[in-house]
Length: 449
Image (cartoon, rainbow, N blue to C red; front, side):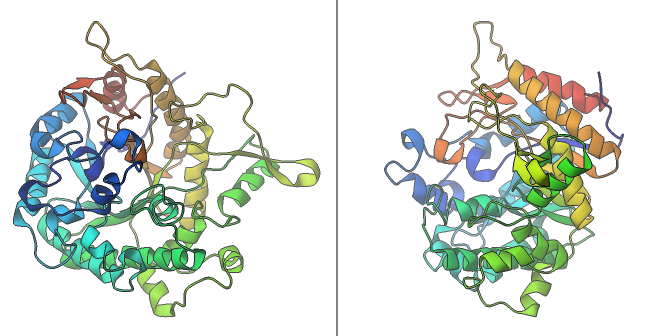
């Protein structure tokens, strides 16, 4: 059994700045909330930090050559806000800005299309001290930064993403305190921060377009629920669709609270009911700003719940049985979620979809023959891609970025979880292509899974 993707399908891999760059205090970079968070005793497993990470800041040329050897055609990376603006606003650090120019030039010279993400969780510590996402000025701070980057790189970078996974950095960073900046805000405060993040996205979209020297494409990269049907019966599909589009829990983990304002210009009615007395005051002008038109919708998909129409047609989750396959992170392996998340998103928002992250943590090591055998990652990716092929061949999904290109700093888990196609020895920083990288090279070349 094989599945072929459209000829123009975009194949790539992804990373983020804090997780791979290192060079934390090098060439004028300022501290981010993750630098500060890592200093807290017990905040990150084993006291790990991103100070060195994969040392990509100093080894990017070799990493680009590695990507080219792997046949990577597109590379999604994020920009460290404080490498460019050490205090988050004000003075531009020209050395930091020049780094991203060199990275983009190296990618283009290698025939790799750069896809830039402006914010992947490493918020400037100086701005956090001024209120962070709770400050009404935070969208303007982000817009200023977006304009600086677009002015510098949009002559060479066509595809831009504003913000990565607000569900996570609000939910974990401002809700339960498990991620930087480690806050445990009340629900009304969390909703204020969320609204400001959405405003920052909208202002960022406008700033990217205004500063660009040529036409660009702008989207974002979010996560959320990946509910999917237990069968293709109309009743099960409707049960999954209802769950996918619903806001029913008092947390940040959903799709429509975030995407409806961006794509439809309004908060969903069930969210307004759920948070009735806690929503911040906002204006029609806010919603117009937030809903600045997008060119594509990026979504990060790892796993999701299966839904069916239960007794009397009442939707219910199909429980995972004992021994259900899971990753080293403990996340269930549910390839069917890939096709249906894309279908439900496209159905509601009518935008081209890109899978901006998908992958798995595995227990990988360099064996006695110098190889990294990771058949589980190959099988995982094959299953998810075969599911995605159905949506891609229906014209709904336009590209896929594997997470991640390198083993890296996995946030509060430190270096315990390995997601990379390339193994990194964190003592020597030696890179070794895993067997999955070699397999994925064939997929990217042929477009066949």
